[in-house]
Image (tube, rainbow, N blue to C red; front, side, top):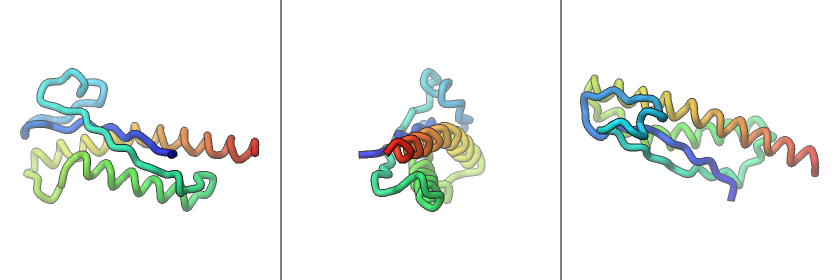
Length: 108
C-alpha cells in the first residue's frame, strides 16, 4: 500500500507554544503524533490526484493537531504552529511521492 507518514508535535498542556518537530522529540509537555495517509488509489503523475493527496494530508494534520473550534486564543496559536510544522514535513513527503511516481511511470 502506498502511504505517507505524517508527523505533528502536539502540546500536551495548554499555554505552551509548539516547538519545531525536532525540538518536540525532547521538549517536556509535548507529544509527537503520527498518522498514515494512504494514496494507493491515486495516480500522483496527475495534478488532480496530487491535489487529492494534499487535501487528505491537510485533514489528517488538522485532526492530529486538535479541534481548533474548541481552543482558547493561546491554544489556537499552538494549533497553528502544530499545523504549520506538520505541513512543512508533509510537503516534503508529497514531493518525494510525486517524484517517485513520475520516475516509475517514465520507466514503465
